[in-house]
Length: 73
Image (cartoon, rainbow, N blue to C red):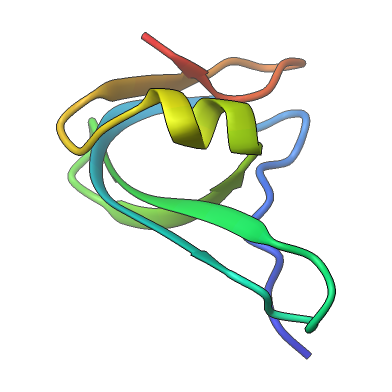
């Protein structure tokens, strides 16, 4: 079993994209990930949707507010 890395609805954070990756973890679906350096200095790997993944680059800021998905800042 693997960790989904999908942010929960009550999560709230912001940070800078350090790396982008994607993979077919289950052999059928493509998953898109970014490694984010949060404001508190912690680095986390987060699953995001394809549209956002295609629109961001390393160095961009993304924000996750309560009740919504991650978005480009």
